[in-house]
Length: 345
Image (cartoon, rainbow, N blue to C red; front, top):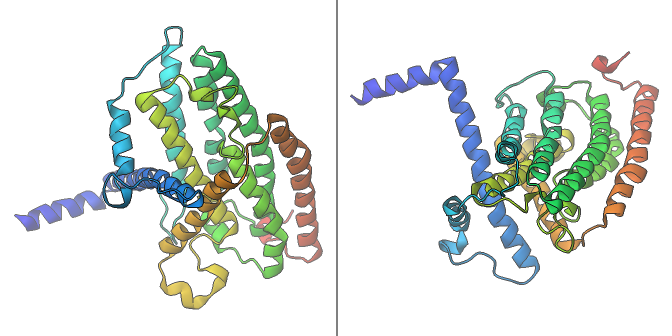
């Protein structure tokens, strides 16, 4: 009986369609679990920085707090404003959450361990992450609330502004690696001088992903003194939870992008061969956790920017700097005859 069941499961696993569905289900489950416990980690880290206890009563060390929060949100009533555009109002959080999961299809967490290993993975990733602005605009407009509308406009302009500098930063990495495939970007040879050349772009990219994900100190769409909850102010229950899950899934996604582009992905740090005994997935997760800690650390350390300061930083500082750096990187690579073969004109 057990042998027949095992053979049946092996047949299902070997079938390409069912295998792909299983891979998608496993990946989605892992991302959702990571999102849930990222909220727990954030609350614990913030409480430690502020000399508080944080979650501590639901389960041992408060480990069941994310599950309790999820059950609470599921049990709440979904309230839709009378004058809201009902279909768009309900579609906006679903779109935001779906896009946050779709982007994970091309993220390689180890050598060969990727759902879709496509040659234009970086373009797919940038396109999907850029579409997140639609969910925000739809939520702000469909709520028929001035607070939500202004919050949506703020968030949309903020995301568009910093995507420009992020795109130029990615161009500098592509010039050095000569490929659009995320796995090949990780494996591309980068001498020490090339890593030093890209280090300023790593700093700019870290700041840009904070603004791209609407995180502190760039959480302008949610100003308590002027906009309350911003574009999410009219949402409740699971519709609010989907926005919440989408935001944290985007944080993990941007951390994974940073790891792949600048930190060597699943490879051991500093190219130390002795550390290769640790599985690549573990190194990838540790590097992602390091970037996520920067997200939380910045929230605890820096006050919120004014909106004019946010726009000035994006358009008057980061845009000229990244444009200059693209020219500089291209010039250095050509001058040292280090331009990858795929990138030669």
